[in-house]
Image (cartoon, rainbow, N blue to C red; front, side, top):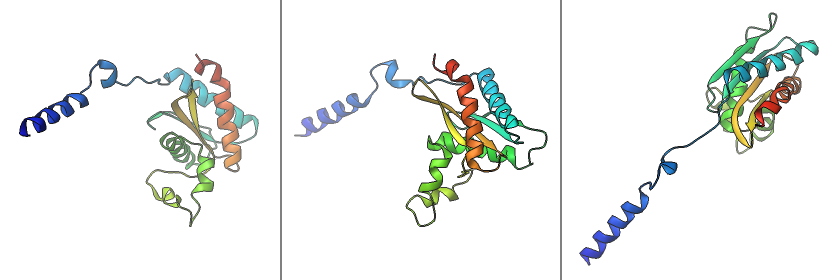
Length: 165
């Protein structure tokens, strides 16, 4: 009986060990700095065409800032807000405008509004390449989250052909 227990324990241990390098390492796509900058510039240019003074932030898939651009008359709060929107979109893997509706007071997910760093306002979008998350963009300073999000989408659209490699 004791021998059977030892054999079962050894089999369990052997069965949980990785058997090849593919199981040990994870491969993922990452935005090149030049593409992140181009994306931010395209979003900023779209907002400028609409007459908005904004800040734009690009984060990598983990939410770490890669690029922040601020138009000369954008408010002093806009870089931090744009970065927060991008971080929120990346970490929740969802547009920030979709989080607004599901996190209203009294709703089951209302607590996400209290998480440190989370900015639950429209203007944050995920950036994908071939179905994989590669980063997120946040825009702040336009008159409303819908306008911020439109500029963010224009930035993504401007580089989408380079992302779909």
